[in-house]
Image (cartoon, rainbow, N blue to C red; front, top):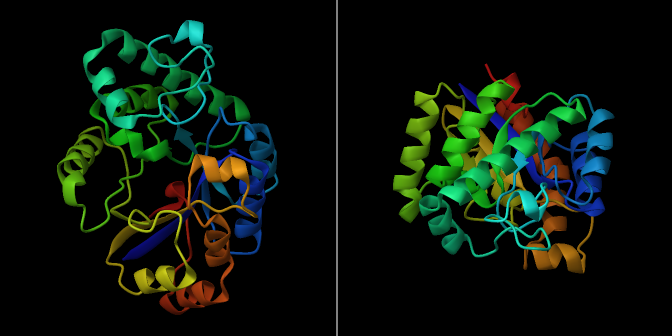
Length: 267
């Protein structure tokens, strides 16, 4: 049995991202979006999601490369004085692993983001992390622990073959999700082509998917801006929106008898 999820990340990051999510869902094949609750346009994203009841919305936990939800005074080991989360992922990962204060600050920020999502009133479809930071064992453990109070939502398993150096981390992630009884996808499409998923690439991947749940994830935007380019240099966000709107992708899904779902729609 094959099931697919088509997800847009960075929902709430910018008006152009929010516009693309609404368009890709209403006119294309997008079935889910991951909301950055602390992002500048999160309120606009929530308003759009409430106009799209079939769009499944999850939490895009952000603990690096973004702005913290909590003020710096409450999480001094996690953010800087301007509220910026760490941009050096490797250095941050080491710090989080060994610093007890950093772990406490991480727990507080992650809990605040779950609470902010609940305050939107939207059903929580899934949870994942910006830059796949839930691969970090400390971040993963905290998301699992905090998530129990929010219904233990399904999580993204960013497994795309070949996984290379990520293989052991992905194996740990999958084992911990299963031990915690948390549902997850089986594989993902988009890791090797992040920011550059074209209609041709999507169709080529679709015809090769195996039984189980495959998540396709995108970073669409209605147009490129200096802010978006600075956030993810080189991403072809408009190209990814075009893939989600592509008649060829829609036709391939129809031929295969597949309808993109959210995590809470999975059989």
